[in-house]
Amino acid sequence: MLVWWVMLAVGVTAVPIIGDLLSLVLGKRWQRLVSRWQRPVLLSTVSFLCALARPALYFFWATVLPYTAPKTSAARTFHVAFILTTWMNAVWAYCCCVATDASAGAAGAPPRLARAMDGFPSHSCGACRAAVPCFDHHCPFTGGCVGGRNFRHFAVFVLHATLGMADACVLSFPPFRDCVLGQIESEQLGIVRTPPPDEAACLATGPASLLFIPAASLFGVLASLAALHGLLLLNGATTFELSRLARRRGVGVLRDLLRLRAGGGDKWALLWQRPSAEAGWGLRMRVLFLPSAPPPRHCALRAAAEAEEEGRPLGKGSV
Image (cartoon, rainbow, N blue to C red; front, side):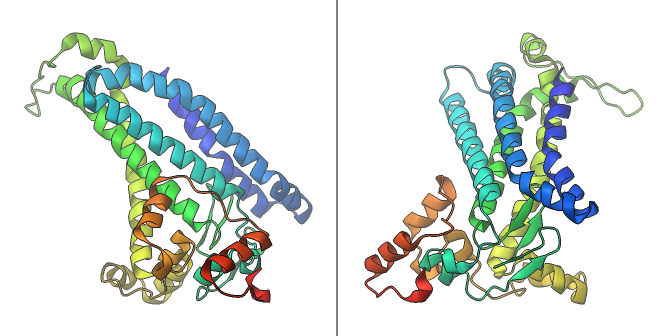
């Protein structure tokens, strides 16, 4: 039963990639049809995954959590709160990333975001067939491009998904170690079976003791993605710029990344949606750990409010 649930979840997450492939190989008429329905299908997929996550979380808490954290312990309360927080933030950030049109120009953005997007080139995406300001990369899992308007939500999604899977690994490793690895016995390799600390708890956990394997696999992928984008943030470089550097310099670009010499722009400004000099620590913590709304496409009222707040006249280029 557990295997079927994992296969279903993996199959559903492949829906965005299928949409991207269809938009690339079909004719122009069908490409327009796929493009029109891609976002609604993605948001429907997220809704389905949210509905699927409810029994999955209950199953996880009913089987794995009692083995690792006793029912009355503070650790159990912490893990439940942590998983719920990271899960809700990841889902919200993913939905905002999908729903935000990255090809909308900086002219309709709030003035602070427009200033943050200065200095990063636009690029015409072959998959989306649109020019994207501050183009970072085309993401098949979101069915669109990641640019200046939705980079914040993409980065927050990766952060919270990585943290959530890290906690899932911490919780699922003890039953995997005691109930699976400890029961392996091989005379040729000299491995002796180790009795589990609590035989009844292992029997109650059942196949859920294998959850560490998919959790560790997902964590490995997400942690690699988070590490890459963390390095790009520190270097002030976009993924698109990295790909161009890699074509010219090969593996030498990795050395530049680790030495923080691969870029030079203020890419953190895309995360804060304003120049980094204007982002205080309170704002940074709020962006990283609390849900935030996507930037509006047309926002004359917001532009006027920000201009009044900053004590400057509202110019024509601010709207």
